[in-house]
Length: 250
Ligand code: MG
Image (cartoon, rainbow, N blue to C red; front, side, top):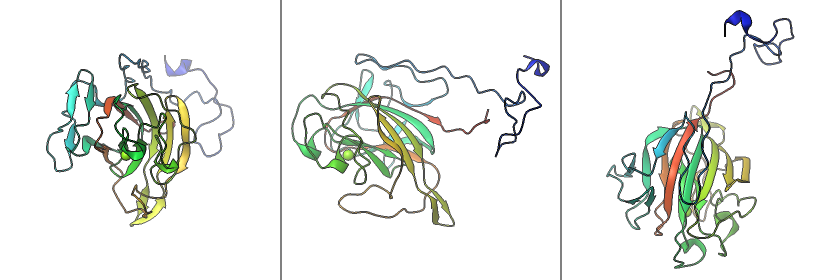
């Protein structure tokens, strides 16, 4: 559409804090994105058109271990599975603030209890864990429950599906910011588990640790996504993210 035909107004007041007027006919239109298709238990959905795909079920080439060795987890038809004792894996891609989608399934064979049952984890920027655990009829400490910000905040509710069922995490991540090695903004997490809100714009205390609390350590604004080998054959599929943009960023 030609600019002269752009709908809107040019005689309206400025929006406070903005360079645009109310209903400004010159304000950039939102970019067009083809939305994702929903996953089913049988099949992963398709990511949105502007997503960066970290794992599409066909290759482990985007992942490596901490020492840079190729990912030793098992690649099956459409998903990957933790091979216990091979170690955590890290995306080769490094990224920061994002909308992240991860699907996972706990093992159907129940072998342990509490933190030993279907344990894995999704670590943003290699440091901040959203717990993966089978908490379907499994008692554990609250801040270690499925979808907990481990060691800091339990999920608002337990929205677990049963072992073997595919589950989703939809995450909005804003990493911490440092100025001259001083924290000026903590990391902030929003998490939706199986379509249910479990953390809402929650500031984090610091990086994830076990049985203690530690402060932030200055770090770059990007890092890898890390998936945990906690000794259980947890499965993952359909992992993608979208960079967070700001208004009028086209
Ligand atoms: Mg874990």
